[in-house]
Image 1 (cartoon, rainbow, N blue to C red):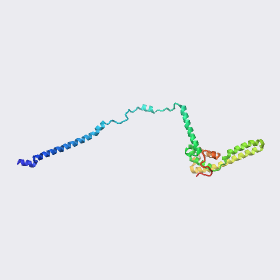
Image 2 (cartoon, helix red, strand yellow):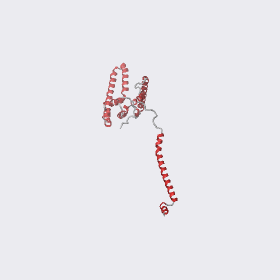
Image 3 (tube, rainbow, N blue to C red):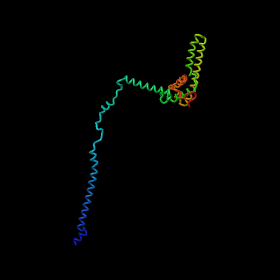
Image 4 (cartoon, helix red, strand yellow):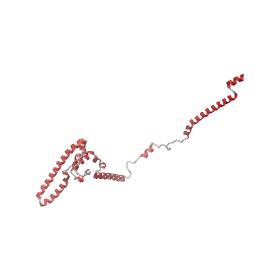
Length: 230
């Protein structure tokens, strides 16, 4: 009877053996999984320990040494060579600016010539007929003629000089009228700063007005008169 009860409770002997073996296999699998997890957790640490440290591979220089490397002489050793090089650069820049004024290239002209109100003054003066444009050649002809006339007809010397002065006054009046109109337009378009004393807009306008049109620098943008600026 006791054997029957034990058989019912615990099963037959071969069943108990299989149950024990299954339990052992289950425990073995659990232990192996735990060992694998520990190995994986330890791998990055070991790899990090084996990897060499990445850096600049040299000691940081001292502040005094770093400053000594960055020092540059304030005065060059060869002053003559540096002075010649500076003059050459300046001459090259002046030549480029002069060529730009001859060709009418506003973008490469000197800064003063690129001011918007100076461009307006040039276009305005170039668009009108100026009496002062012919003053220098007319004055030269009158002076040469007066030299020859003095020897043969001395009485004509005074009228010739009077004619030159009349023409000079006419040029002055023409320039005054031109500047009065031009000044009003400049103030309306660019404000008071365009006609301020430091800008020298008045002298710039009359000095251009007394030059022959084809000899003016910067070169007029239009070949003929009549193209008034907007």
